[in-house]
Amino acid sequence: MSETKIRVLIVDDDQDQLALAERSLSAYNFDVRTHRSSLGVSNLVRTSAPDLVLLDVNIPALTGDKVLALARSQAPAATKFILYSASDESKLRALARASGADGYIVKSVQGEELAQRLVAFHQKARTSEATPAAP
Image 1: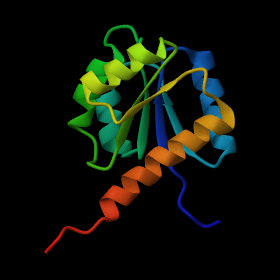
Image 2: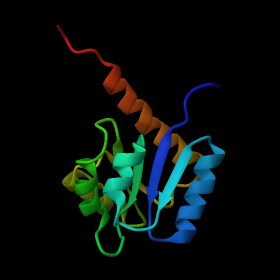
Image 3: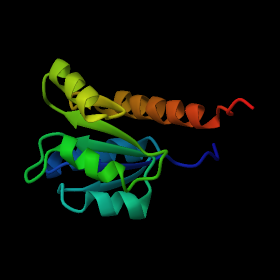
């Protein structure tokens, strides 16, 4: 398969969670970058141009929904932001809607299922980009 790897940036202050997600996604051929702080995410998104940003909601200093607002303005238009949290799914869904996130995934989703969901987000983004504008 010669398709380009999906570039994902995972932002989480929990080192164990970062390592687990990085190992899982790397095994499914993702190009994974990690970051442990809410500080500097905007610059990292601007310089690394990830396809997807998996953003923990409960990060000290600046919560994920606030980071999303700042980082989106620096990100390429095609970059999709997905909130990632161990919070109750209904609360996470509401926060994703309120913050303008492109989606959400609960942290209990790991391994192959996490990879499949991220691929689906990426394919959905590529499909909407490829749709030609009407003349």
